[in-house]
Structure formats: structure tokens, C-alpha cells
Image (tube, rainbow, N blue to C red; front, side, top):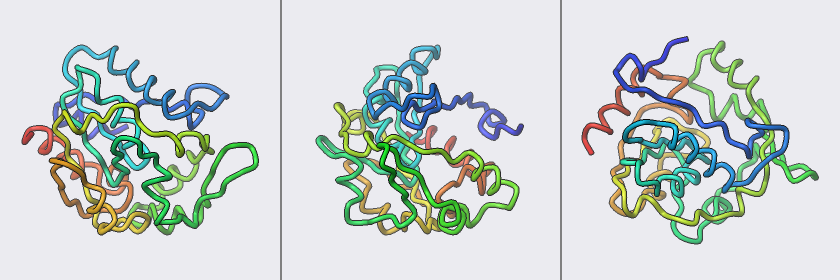
Length: 209
């Protein structure tokens, strides 16, 4: 498996989110996701840069308050301030691909994900991504981060200009404070559609802050 960041000298790890059922059969909430992120941070020797994609912006906003975190990278994501939940931030932009259930979870329409989220990915990558779709707990969408790390830490927001799910003009409005905006020509998943180029953009952003 290719590791574009590793090839550029950057070690990376993915945080398994309890709210998506990635750690156990029971689903957690935003604060469980933050705790999982902090556990990963604690296991790393040295400074940490957190990258949050889409909903992940909620997680890194609180988890980034950890003293070992030196930077935050937001990728076509929500960027909450104090007291703001994801539902607060996206209420004006209803998402037709969401499929809420009666069991406190929410899923997505695979056909719409293909059309609006993965339109610039090749077919093999698209199929692999669709196979990973899972239902998520609804709880995190109503919870606000308890700390706002971007107010104290350098932050960069990657605006994905070909994103059909979260249009670039919406992303630009989400950039807060002294966060530096960087425009990148890709859809909602730049790490899938243009992995090598996006990895280089990440490294450049880290080195320039």
C-alpha cells in the first residue's frame, strides 16, 4: 500500500472513531472520538499535527488543545467555535444524501456519495471507498467541542475547489480567526483522488506555519 506522506518523510496514523463503530460494536459520541484521538496523540513521541476531514474538524478542534499538538489542518470540514455543534454549522445546508434511522444512527446514500463526494476518483478507488461506508451515531452532530484549539494553535484550512458536496464558497465561509486558507483542486476526498499532490500540499502547509 502506498503511503504518500511517508515517502515525503512524514509519519502518519489514522484515528479509529468510536462514533463510526471503528473501535467496537457500540457507537460513541463526539467526546469518545476526541478521547480516541488523544489516546493516539499520547502514544506518539514528539510534536503532532492533527488533520481533520469533514466531520473530523469537530474532533481536532477539541483534541488539538493537547499540548503536544503544534498545528491543525482542516480539510473541507466544519470548523466550530465555542458552543457550535455540527448541526448548528450545517443547518443552512441540508444534505439530501443523509439517511437517518430510528436507532439513533445516520447513514448515507451510496449513489449520491459516488456522484457528489467521489466524482474525481477512479473506479477502483470509488468502489473501495463505498465498501467502507458505515452508519454513524447521531449524537456527535448535536455536541459542541469543549475547547477551541484553533484559537491558540496555527491552523490551515484546505478548500477543495472541486467539492460538489460542500461547495468551495461554503468552505471559504467556514474559515475562522487567523486560519490560513489554502485552495486545492480536488473533490471532497483529495487524499483519494490526488494522494501524492495532496501529501505534498500537507507537507508544504506544515513547513510554512
